Amino acid sequence: MKLIIISGLSGSGKTVALHTLEDEDYYCVDNLPIGLLPQFIERVLSRRVQLYDKIAVGIDARSDSEDLRDFGTILEWIQQRDTETKIEIEIIYIQAELDTLIKRFSDTRRKHPLTQKGLPLSEAIEVERNLLKDVATSANLYIDTTYTNIHELRDYIKERVVKRKKTQLSLLFHSFGFKNGAPADSDFVFDVRCLPNPHWEPNLRVLTGQDSQVIAFLQEQEDVQLMLEHIKNYLQFVIPKFIKQNRYYLTVSIGCTGGQHRSVFIAETLHDDFRDQLDNVSIHHRELSKLD
Image (cartoon, rainbow, N blue to C red; front, side, top):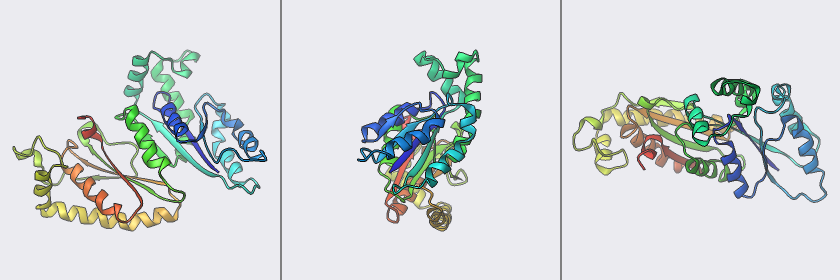
């Protein structure tokens, strides 16, 4: 049986992720107190006929604070319980930057669950972040939705979570621009701002790293080829080690100044190379998605 625990900050997209899994035939329960998770699992497994082999549970900061601190112990109990049914547990933690969360609550006019205790919204978000820190630390997949809309989040969950086969690593190459901040949900970040910049070529400035003219320009640069070789060699060294440690997800982010040319080209090239080596390899261009 597969159990996915979705947690994170209110307003970050937990409900969207849960509904996406529900559409993919997961049996979903939202806002389950973490202290009741063992009893819930017992209830499911005690059925004579197993109706569900894929379950997703939403957990947030409204759970008892002591239960949240015991999160690791609760997971260990579930995994070590004496049963013929092996439980594969994945933890997905979703968050966004403070300003983005405040804007989302303002736009939707919804109340944060912890503001009922008289806290201002900004303080409620920070209290929630602190309450969930043990859950965040345990996460297999950490998603930052600061620059992600609900449609992109749905696609992200389908591509990386739903399509991932058991024991298979999901590898994501993610391009971005440092001028808009580095992504918080990366396992590795490679800075390629030292490479020749097509932005300073007038005929290339309005294009992207997906256009043939920019690709041709960067392919001719010796430093670009050396950078690609170094990154590929490093990833070919570490990826098998991550797989041996049963890591489900690996996010590799490539950053340049604006996230339009160099980082896009490097990410696309790496994606094409590793797609021949691994089954589940995807790509996302943060800054280009804003142009759509």
